[in-house]
Length: 467
Image (cartoon, rainbow, N blue to C red; front, side):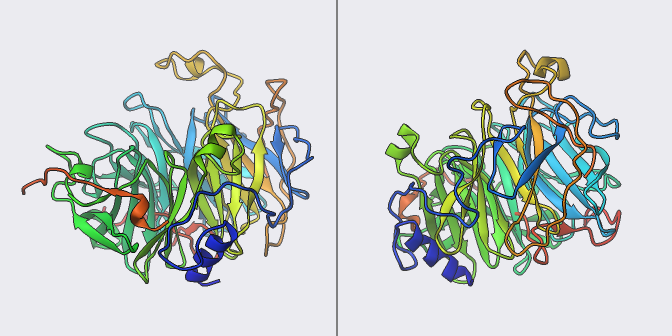
């Protein structure tokens, strides 16, 4: 379906307006999804409630070696991406969101064509609070540091681990969340995780190198039209980037962002909204806004909106919840909105980093503070948390729409807890909703590639552009 068709259908299906640029009323009621209802479904051995025909395995548990690699999976897994390795397999990468300075990073798990884990390793160390990110068309991973003032930077990482990661301060020094690359216009869109944040656009000087470029903030008028205001000092040496562009639209806690078919989708967590920008028409729309009363009483189908991904062949948007009732919720181009899966017994956690493998028959995601055999303090002594809630990462396989299903391996390990079994596998609106900023003026991702929802590594070990 065409991008405008998606947004219009979604507005109609979710009870909103039927035309572009008209505010969407608060929503939250469940509709019938393409995979059926979770009502009455029992959880599996991992505590996951899945649609009929779907199965899950745990591929990594914080504090334990990943399969036979010897690599210890880090705590608090977050934003992720998947890359075709060019040899029939794929590489899954995930952030580690640790707010203690220099204790964050990014890790990778390599799978062969059958889904067997063949290796795991670090691709970035010594960074801080790596939260969201996104894949680039040239096969690198952008990892954003979600650190407070003056802020963090965006890192570009090689999923193969053959080239060292490189920081890109010119993409802005602020509380980074996620990134999405528009390959047609050669632009990068960036979210900011603060209650009064901006949505940014970065124009590289020599695309695909991200070393230098121009940073701008979105300003959206009452009709939904988007214009972009220059950020004079992306390094925020005196004034935070979000205060440098008077008139920029304020977004209430930017989270996940994804490019698909000339549309950028992104979420804001403090107001539980999903936004879109049509990059052809240059129009902003809110395609989902949770009813605050339904959020408060726990009846909203989707709350705590966080990271998201788009299933390329179908246009289905999968949105992970930070809290709520620990679900991944699907929004379809036909206007359906329904829980796709639910995690039980992990109410203190959040669902992070949903992303598909190249074939689109496996969905990866993490429970950031899910159960672990070792305590957080035991794994990372610099942290005082004594609970066994360091996080774990899942793979779900099943009859995703328009897919040829490949069965995963079922080799698993034992469970450390009685409540949630951990089996570590060894193989296979318009803009009127946003306010504008009145502030002193400074003087002076993720790409969906080739119908697979991943970025391809074009040349093995090709490294990071501009290095």
